[in-house]
Length: 346
Image 1 (cartoon, one colour):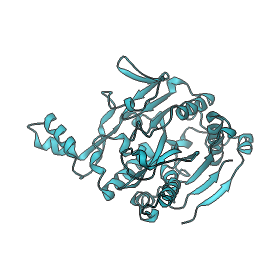
Image 2: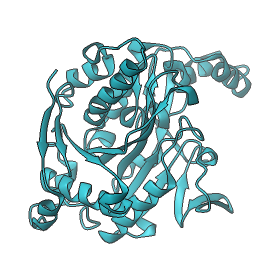
Image 3: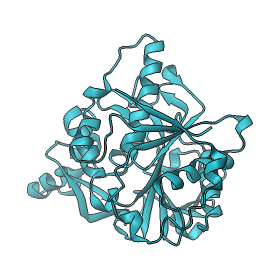
Image 4: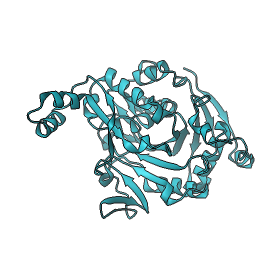
């Protein structure tokens, strides 16, 4: 496998005028060029500036390469999907989230136009920004959507799969529909999706961490926007074929795929073995942020960090070429995932 590595100066990216190359709202919805698999790679250190400065350099370079401007003029609202799958041991830092929010404020977005989405907000440990206010969860003034909200899942929008549920979910359906076998069997097949993604005004950003997954091979940007935001997802955890199919099929839904803005993967702490639950024995880290529009491409680059950590610690290697999550995404014409173009931002 070949990774193409280019280098672009953050200062030169900042100096380029990009206000005229993105002229219509429909450009971000149109996928004529959206399956490009460029991934920006930035080695973050205290000497390179604040988190806000580093993220601004990355996002400005992203806007230049994608020829798409992150502006409320073209993106009315943003929902940031936070990865809480391994919290509190491994999670997106509040500093990174705050830095991203500051970058978006600087581009004209307001607290009212940015929402957060998290399956388990109570596990994030976002203190002091996170708070329960009345019937709503908020972080720094931003609404936090979660399954605790009655209208979180859209009852008419779901991923259908023949994969049987786990015992816990099956018991839940039996309690809910004790005398209706047909209804229980229907519900067992369904994984409901967050209703906010059906809103034509909402586009999304994935903010996630990297983790080994013994079934899928990797848990990162792609799983964050698929298995980690649906109901009844446990049934996919032990099946490499249907699990990978669910990830790719969910992300390929036009209402999701066509409204992605970018995916950011934080490699400052990641877990290279022992997934899919947190295990402190297998934690490594590298002060690197990966950013790209395609979550599959971002994960493809991140795979190399998992592979390197596994190799250095004497663990069995896994072949990216055999990873069904990437094979399936390419088969659905979601880009050349196996060989993304890696662009280093100094």
